[in-house]
Length: 139
Image 1 (tube, rainbow, N blue to C red):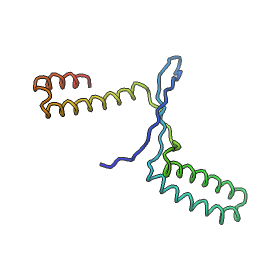
Image 2 (cartoon, helix red, strand yellow):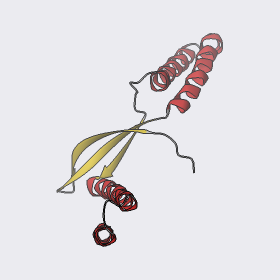
Image 3 (tube, rainbow, N blue to C red):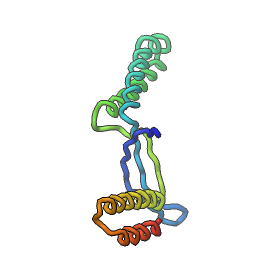
């Protein structure tokens, strides 16, 4: 199974929702390095089209076209070729949903670690069964 690589930046935020205070997470997403590198080279092509075709043919619109192409190209250069990136999307999730996701992953990791401890004979079968049941009950 293939996954698209994303880098997440998480910021806490409190939102007033119809009189209720609700905690939310703002997750800023930046594209993968590979995706940004491809888009950078496509952006260079669009900049060249802007300089040699759009500006002479369309005047002010051509300048706008070239400026936007340059901005997009610069953004993808930063994301593709440097360690400091510029997030291009933002996702806002309720704190409870985010915490459930983190807790679920945490329990999965703890189950894997427990299995490893048992396979290495560091805990007994009874200890393994007891702890496994506790972790599954938390799901």
